Length: 341
Ligand SMILES: [Zn+2]
Image 1 (cartoon, protein in one colour):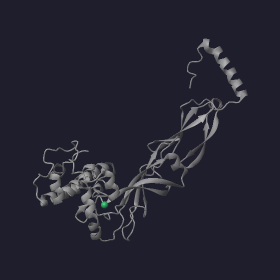
Image 2 (tube, rainbow, N blue to C red):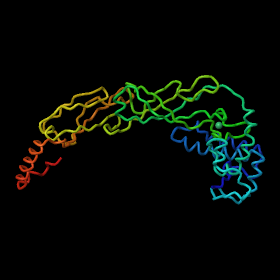
Image 3 (cartoon, protein in one colour):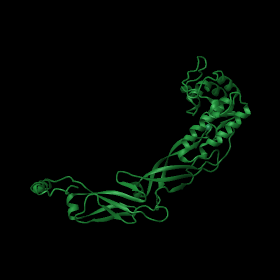
Image 4 (cartoon, helix red, strand yellow):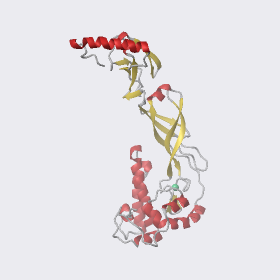
C-alpha cells in the first residue's frame, strides 16, 4: 500500500501545533470542498478533499498522531509501505464490515481501523438528530436524440448524491472525520427518475425537478435536481449543433425514379420527396425542423440519402443480373466511371 505523508498533505511541519494543524486544514478544506467546484472539477476536488480530511483525522488526534509519528520522517508520499508486525490492526475487509465502504486510504485503515471501531459507539451517542433541507443536486443526462424526438416520458438513471447517514451530512462524527464519507458529508448515489421530455428541448438546457435532489434530514424539504440535458447520437440520429442528421435508406430504383420517405423530425413525422436521379450522400434539408438553440432559433433537419440493396425477390435478382450484363456491355466505352455510389 502507499505511504501517506499527512504532514505534507496539510502543508505543516512535523512539530506543528494543534492550532496550526486546524488552521491549515480549514484553509485547505475550504479550497477543495467538492461543493465549491464545478461539475468537471468535482471528482478531482473530492479526491483532494478526502486526502486532506484523512490527514487531518490523523494529525489532529494526539493518539493517532503519535502512532503515525513512530514511522519517522523518512517515508515519502506514495512510497510502498508495509506496516511493521504489530502495527497492522485491521484489514480493509474488516474495516468495511465495521464502517461500510468509506473513503479512507488502505494505509489509514490498516493503521487506525481498530481505534475507529472502539470510539464509534461513543461518537454515535453524542451525535444528535437535527433538521435541514436536502441539498440541490446538479447532474447531466445524455439524451439519445431518438428519445428526445419521440417525446413523452422516459425513465433514466442519473448520478446523484445522498446525505451521508453516518454523520448526517456534517462530515464529522464528534471530533472525528466521518469514516463513511471522509468529511464530504455526501455519498455518491444513482437514482431512477421519470422525465417528461420538454417540448422546447435544446442541447444543454437545464430542467429543474422539484424534490428529486438530496433527501431532507429529519424532516424538512427535499432538495431539487437540476438536470442538464445533452443530446447525443443514437443509431438513427446525429446531432450537429442545433441541426440533426439522419440517414434515409433508399433502394437503387428509388433514387433513380424518385420516392417519398417518412422521417421523424422534432415536429413529428414528415414526408420527404426524393427527386428522381438523387445521388447517394445528398443532404436533404428540412428547414427549421431541428432543435431550438435556446434563443428561439430553430436548427435544420437533414436527411442524408444512402443507397441500400433490400432483400431481393427472385425476379428482382434476375432483373439485376440483366442490368449487370448491360453494364458489362458498357465497360469498353468507359461508361462505368462515376457510376459508383
Ligand atoms: Zn459522513
